[in-house]
Amino acid sequence: MGTERGGRTGQHRTLLCGALLCGVLLAAGCTGHDDRPAPRSSSPTASPASPTLSAERDGRTGSPDRGVSAAGCAGGGPALREGRGTIRYGGLERVYLLALPRGRGPHPVLFDLHGLGSNAADQAAYSRLPRRGAERGYIVITPQAAQGRLGWTLPHAYGPDDTGFLGALLERVERGACVDRGRVFAAGMSFGAGMSTALICATDRSTGSTTSGATGSTTGGSTTGDPVAGRLAGVAAVAGLNIVPPCENPAPVTLLAFHGTADTIVPYRGGHPFQNSHRRRALARLVTLPPVEQSARAWAKALGCGAQDDVSAPAGTVRLDRWTGCRGGASVRLYTLRGAGHTWPGAIGVPRLGPTGRDLDATEVILDAFDATPPR
Image (tube, rainbow, N blue to C red; front, side, top):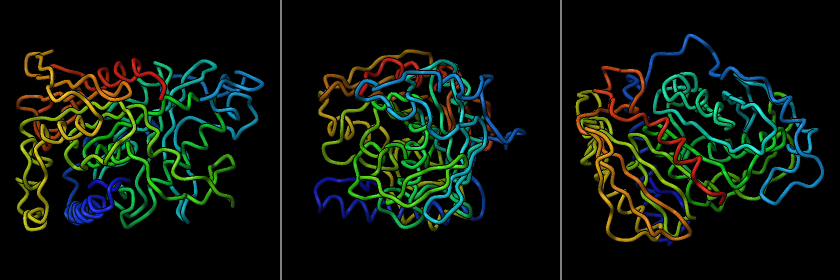
């Protein structure tokens, strides 16, 4: 599912594979929500117990340091409110959840991307990243796929321009809050993990719009390229690292992956997705995913890491493969959870998705790793 800039031959091949897999997964999801991680939250928002961004607007004035959002730190940008928000982008009304931290900033930004057939409220409740992240000082954006779509449009694939949509959300937050522009992160579940890893690589597209207004509507204007793709400092892929292959020469990034060996929806050992779904089997046979370990090695190679991984066992059922010595301070970590299914480690149990690993809390591991990641 790689749709990133690189060698043209490889790019065209991965574009074709990405479009095919995206179509198969979306079509497969039309008869059910196999990738839905959790019951719908009873609350329409997923905000931490923290104030609105008024504290942010008392932040820095004058010319902030390079890498800090000037408009947001100086104040006077669009008002940001916690909870559910909308933004009009690409002719569509798009929905997102916003969790805001206390303090003046500059704050890192974290995107939390849901899986196929899920939504923003489910993802916020399942990952717990909005609450936990805001407690640590992150601005957490939990966007939702376009209405009528079960999943994200990968960069350069057919469908709503989700890469540009995420960029418009980031631009709006940077105008309304004091943001550390060098510390933008993304985490995702399943197909959301695939979208997150796709955003590691720069694209050659232009969003062609800017954001304004309290509800995030778009107005005329232009931006240069996609302001999310290619500038992420860190990515965490839960149950979906092997959905999108790496591009050539990606920017240095902290990359974490979590995957259960008993995952039958996005299989750890590779092969066809939705292995236990009779209704989806015919469509799933059109796609063959690589093994997760192979994908981790491919990302390590693309990021210029050493060929040999360091193997440890940080918990009873957890194996950690770690590649270091990477170009530009990048790193790759793969947490393999023995016996776990298509689930978020440490989250609430969802029996239809298989067992949930309890020896590791992915949410805390992700935030610890992102806390330690230097600005890019």
